[in-house]
Length: 283
Picture 1 (cartoon, rainbow, N blue to C red):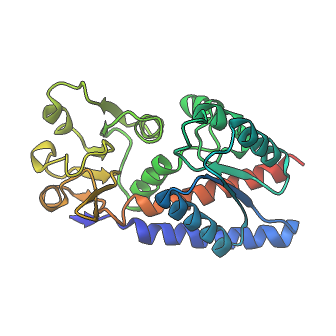
Picture 2 (picture 1 turned 45 degrees about the horizontal axis):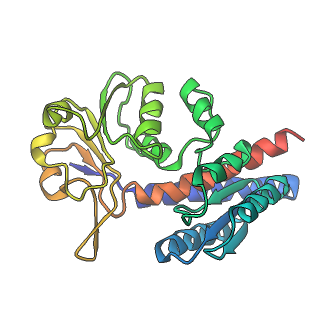
C-alpha cells in the first residue's frame, strides 16, 4: 500500500508557484492578488482564512483581507464584491462560506467576476468545466487529479466511483475524471446496493461527510482510495474512510489529515496565479 502524501505534494506545488511568481514579478513588476472575505467570527472559518492569507505572503502574493461583521446587510457585501471586481490588483476573490442567514450565498457567489472566481463555483465556470475549457476549476477536485498524476496513477479507461454529489466535490471531480477518459459512477443517498457499486471502483473517491463510512467490504483489492472527508470524532480529525481496515486492501490511499486537505489551498493559490497571468495577457 502506498500512502498518498498530500502535504508533500502541496509543498512541491507551492514551491513551483513561488518560483513562477518571482519570475513574473521581475518581468511585470506586479504580483498576484487574492482577496478573502470573512463575514462574522466563526472560529473554523477564521482559521481557514488566516491560513490562506499566510500562504499568500509565503508565495509572494498580495493579500487583501476583508473582515466584516456578522450582521452586515447583503447589499453592503454585494457592494464590496463589486469593488473587488473592479480592483486591478485583485486577481482572485474568495468569500468564505458559510455566510449568515440574512445573506443569499448563491447571489454573492454569482456576483463575483468569473475571471476572479478562484473557487470555481460561478455558474459560468461550472459551465466551462462541463464543456471542458475551464481555466478556474474547483480546488479540492483539481487537487485530487494532481495527486493521482503525481503518483502515476492511470486515469484513462479506469472505473472511478464517486461517493457524494455535492457541487463542491462530487460533481466537479466527476467532470475532471471524465475529461481524463475515466468511466464515471456517482453514488448518493438513494443509491441501491451501494457496496456492489463501490467494489467495482478502480478509483474510489469518498466525499459523503460521514466518519469511517467506507469500510473494507466496500473496496475491492488494489483500488485507489481518495478520502475527501473531514469529520471530528472525539476531538480528532477523521475521514469518510475507515483507514485502518481499508488501507490493507487499497493499492494507494490518502490519509486524513494530510491527504486531500493540504492540496486545496495549494490549488487555490494556483488558480490565483492563473487568473493573474490571464489578466496580464489581456492587457
